[in-house]
Amino acid sequence: MSLQCGIVGLPNVGKSTLFNAISSAKAEAANYPFCTIEPNVGVVTVPDKRLDQLDELVKPQKLIPTVIEFVDIAGLVKGASQGQGLGNQFLANIREVDAIVHVVRCFEDGNIIHVNGSVDPVSDKEIIDTELQLKDLESVDKKISRLEKTAKSGDSKAKKDLMVLQDCKRCLEEGKNIRSLSLDEEAMEAILDIHLLTVKPVIYAANVDEKSMQQGGNALVETFKKSVAAERAEVVVICAALEAQIAEFSDPEEKTMFLAEYGLVESGLDKLIRACYSLLSLITYFTAGEKEVKAWTITRGWKAPQAAGVIHTDFEKGFIRAEVIKLENYLKYKTEAACREAGKIAVEGKDYLVQDGDIMHFRFNV
Image 1 (cartoon, helix red, strand yellow):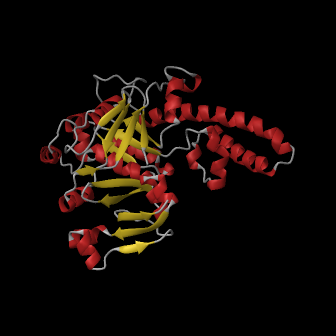
Image 2 (image 1 turned 180 degrees about the vertical axis):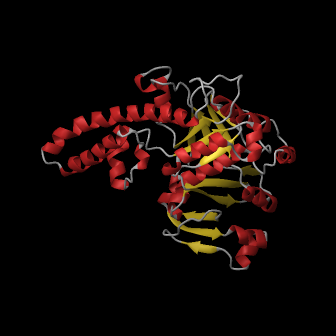
Image 3 (image 1 turned 60 degrees about the vertical axis):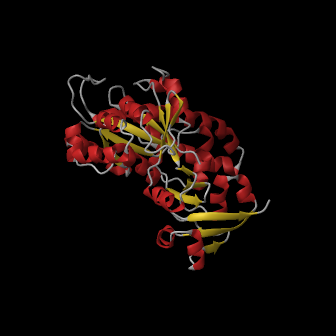
């Protein structure tokens, strides 16, 4: 499954610097692909030490990590909901992503003028929230108008959907995002067709200077964290300027040494990727053979046939069983044959819930 995260933010908050760092990131090995699909889409590999461990044991012809796409969503300014700037393009792009990475400026720099005259990450967030809420309110009002007549005729589904939409309308009018509502699966279906923007999960990337990065944050970050505490959203502290330097390293050891100089064990991009996976409840399973070792991204809670379908729809349609090796057993016994001999390959059926790190082989017949 393809994962897309849209990077949003006001001008001069570091959004473009972060995206440019992502887009110029050097792959750590020849088998780790990187590409730019379009000028505003960068594709980077998801760091996973387990893949490297399997590579050492299996020694496949190819090593294929899972990837994540970051979309640089440009054009957001105050009034974007009314088409100001590149508002319409912005809104069209953001509807397509799975999650939003909202970059807020948490650093002072007299050489970089803030669009509103002073650095205030809380205010910056509210500007973007307001634009998205106004656009969602427009979409909700249009659907309410369409449903009212049908609901009055006695249509039970229309009545239920109308109640959901009215709850959404009240939420938006109070200046809140739709994701703050506790909507069940049925309620989500009522708004699925209007592609609301504020229902999307969000991660806040607090962009700081190098000194603050070494300290783990600053006063602006702490103030911002308090302002979004009720959202239960994750705030990842990054330094976009530092990320631009990290992106230049192609040698993993040199990159590690550079990070160590700043007292860091991983890059901000790696933290951001992990946060995206956690936010969207994603896990990784592996397939391993002489031709290739490959990582596959699925949603936590998926059963074996669904996971097989990520490889090919025929795998899901004709699913018979899955052979599963736990990573710790593969690392212990070194080979698939040794795992089989030790009785460490489990045969699982259609109801098996795939676990993070499972090494799987699917049997199917179409």
